[in-house]
Length: 419
Image 1 (cartoon, rainbow, N blue to C red):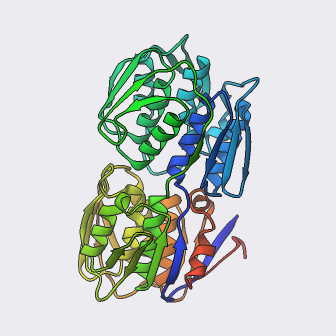
Image 2: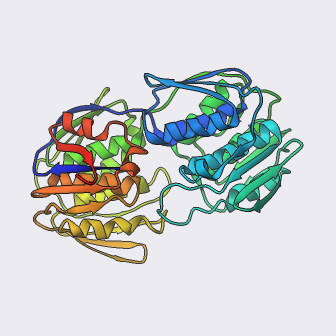
Image 3: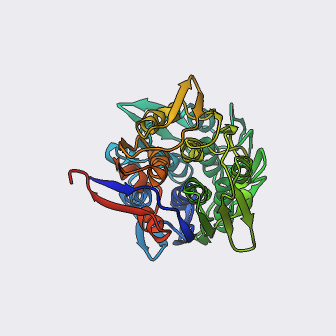
């Protein structure tokens, strides 16, 4: 187990390239189960979750190689239609293979999923939709068990725009018989990327990026080559790192339109965010001011950037009000920010952030992936030394996080946790 040791107070300056989207590539990997020939997925980040998902696919029987940012996935010759607990507990995306296995092989047994401890993320809607498509599903001894002779096209309407449910049902519908219409779906860019990947495999999908998906099932899907979209959450994290340290940071490899509301909120707080054909650059010409914001499904402010935004608001002038509408445990990070000298209080799903003159270094714990990133940003601006523990959470979603920050001038190093 490692920790980050950060010497704060260094203004970040320079450029960094953003990698492929974590929240996309894991779902592309799940969808590759349906292909009857090899898939090549490029611009893949070298992060822990990709390696865990690779182990999930290998356990099913697929061949997986990963080198130089490229995944090559070959079909299973003798598939094992089960994802055991020791793998599923490590990654939430393991549940996405449920739809792939059912639609391709007609059977699946998947341990109840794990992932970040950020609140209730029930899979009831996944199960409800698959049952409507003709699957027989149940939970036994901690496993989801499902069977279907062949899934059938159906008219589905989600209770709310769940990203995971949208992805699982989209995948399941691809090889179902007939047409499936899914209403009130998520509109995240990662959904569009998944739809493009499946279309490249020969799938027939309309409406990606809108609130209604129309999927005409096909009998077979072939392999394809695909470049993963840039990671909008990584992009926002580095822009906020630049703003937190009152530096000048330019990022490339990310689509600006995918983080428009993040840039708008940063501008509202007093940051300058300039967009060119190749880069997005942040500077802070004056004071940072408090803002009000609410996390919402895309195109709203992403919950995955809320802790990083808290790091910026911790030293902003005035009071900020932050409402978390997605995950009920996302404010677990507030206690850790207060260890750094922040003045934050929570009430139900609201946080009140009173800006302080400065943060002070302290030992803190990354309670989840994005909380860990937020605490690192806090450490970058804090006086003295900050130690961030449990950084295995951060490794799940950020490739070479400390190296990229160091390239911008941050004084950060990875050392054993007991050092």
